[in-house]
Amino acid sequence: MEKVDGVAEIALKNNWIEYYTILVDPNQTPIRLDKYLMDKLERISRNRIQKGIANGQVYVDNKIRKSSYKVQPQEEIRVFLPQKNEDKDIVIAEDIPLDIRYEDDDIMIVHKQAGMVVHPGVGNWSGTLVNGLRYYLEGKDLPVMEGNPMDRPGLVHRIDKETSGLLVIAKNKEAMTHLSKQFFDHSIDRTYKTLVWGEPDPYEGQITGYIGRDERHRKNMFLYDEESKGKWSVTNYKVIEPLYYVSLVECRLETGRTHQIRVHMQSKRNPVFNDKKYGGDRVIKGTVFSKYKQFVENCFSIIDRQALHAASLGFIHPTTGEKMYFESELPQDMSDVLEKWRGYTNTRKEMKK
View 1 (tube, rainbow, N blue to C red):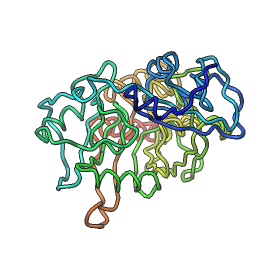
View 2 (view 1 turned 30 degrees about the vertical axis):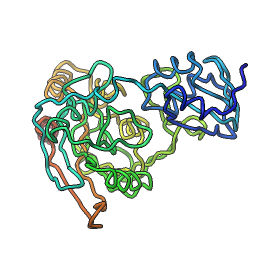
View 3 (view 1 turned 180 degrees about the vertical axis):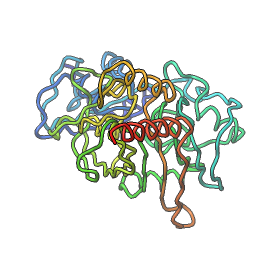
């Protein structure tokens, strides 16, 4: 294989951006280079990773390698991707109504509706939260977190398309740096409310493990015991309202991995209600008799998404040093389906008397 000296100089000459330098774990089992990078670089698409490898923009111990190369323990991987000419103009301003709960010169707190994509990407180049921010702020140059593409201005964190709730937006570089460090240090106070199948046992506890790509279903995440297969994750949960068939649960995050709550609740066999990706879109608790099944399907039609809501957000203000805390109400679809389950459970109790 071609040995390359002065990789950084080559990157500068070719107008590349270095996204990551990765030191492979000492306990890593041999795995294809492209699959390894897909696990580690969650924010970069599979297509861009494979294209980058094919174009000679991925170096393992300063050598260009193919996708089929088996990654070895303690190797250094450097990933470069070309600067897209269209990156700077990829986010167009769109007049999209935004539910802004707080704003000052440094930050914004936005309540995202379920179904809204946070930032532009494949299949969603418009109609996103970031498109709306660009319009609302009248072209103001929002900062981009180091390592992020240019299509994610102002974003310090994200929530899934079908998850509703609160997001903090950084309006300048100083705020971005300060907030990013709080997320990195896991000092951000974040709670979610979710409706899950069954009643988690025990009612209060902690779920931990390493979240990485599911080896059988690459679009899904999975909870592993082995450090080499994912990133450490911690969720503290508490059942707020047990309803036998389902439960309203509060989850407090210590880490923020992709699909963390959804994966953690699935691992306890209490998947998030109507979570199509992680098995919550079928009857998990209760009979399969036609009347009950019809009731569940009616509930699915009320909340046609995973029943997950980013309910609160607490952090230190990047300029004033003040402790900020925000809460948001359950969205209507979650409230409605929760009320239906309350009614169903009470009816069953009355029948048993």
